[in-house]
Length: 532
Image 1 (cartoon, rainbow, N blue to C red):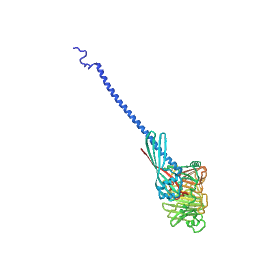
Image 2: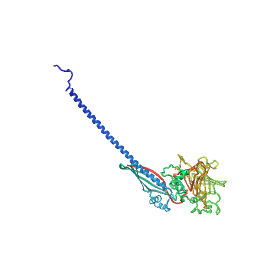
Image 3: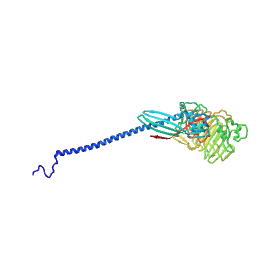
Image 4: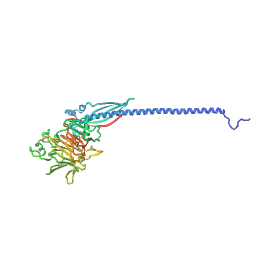
């Protein structure tokens, strides 16, 4: 049999046409499978894109809600701060309110705030902008009170709750801020007020007054409130220092007129007489110990210095000199007069009463021979750590050199003494302690004082101006300044409020306001919480 093809090769199963048909069917399955795969991938990408867009939208809306809630806290705090700064420092209160506060602090405190500052709590603020809206509610509650005798120091809890929303979303985001308010009520310690001028001024006028006179504040603490500038025409600065004089002399003086020559001579240990007290420096001493220092007459120079672990004070009058050295650590006092030297195993009170002028007050050094000399060419600590000094003069006080507390340090131009227990208070009453005659109760900076003068003290001119003599000077006061008026004469004044003095200070031997007042001296933020 003859074949049309070689028998060694197998024939096509069904011819070429049939083979091609079978190949076309396999390709369709592959195409369908690939379409299914790519369709699944496409659908997955679409679903993932939708999820991604939704997540981004949620994040965007969440950010908007966060911003709205945060704005509520910030605006609520800003509104509260502005209100307290405009109405909070040294507001008059009724005399009987202090006794009411002592009897029932939680109940009286809200009434006291409302009477002094107005109906400020609870404080509600509603605002909106660009589709966002927020609402904040500020509340204040009593926490505790400390009775300091002439005044009370109150700590109150502050809470600001805020809810923020967006016009396209129904949900709200809630935030809260926790803080504290520090309040003083009663006859306030003047060092708690950073700047006081006895002249009625509006807020705008106060800003213009500071700019025109080259006055600025330095502040580096955690207090949200700006340093207080009190400008009032009322008699807030006391005209006498009866309380401080009675403590220094260890006698009872209820009114300034009670300090007669006979009473003063008895307190000084002089023989009984109606004659005036001779000029000189007297260290008060009695059976109970040592009191303060009394100076009769004008002091040509008063120099403060540190001698090892002792505080040194030198007072010069004409051709005579008195020096006092006392060490709190060793409980030792040496008092050198022109006639004799006295030693005591006690330390005196840190109150110096001068019935006259202080023509030059400043810091200095103790030389090897024991002489105390004023230094103007460099900054030297003059008040020993842990020592509080109150210098009260009936007449003018002139600052001639630096007065710096031991242990003070400067950071970026701002002094810090938070951990120190030292304090310096300088007070010119403008009234004679015995005759009650009106005197020049001012404090001035001498024209020969250093150009960059640093004074770490609370300065109070009871019956006169604070004046800076000379030109090209920058006076830095760490503490406070109170005066009837101010004369800068083109010089600069920078005030750095002492955070310790804001709440009363380490020592109570300070001048007090002439009438009861309320002052919000501190607003501090403790915690900020976000809630879903």
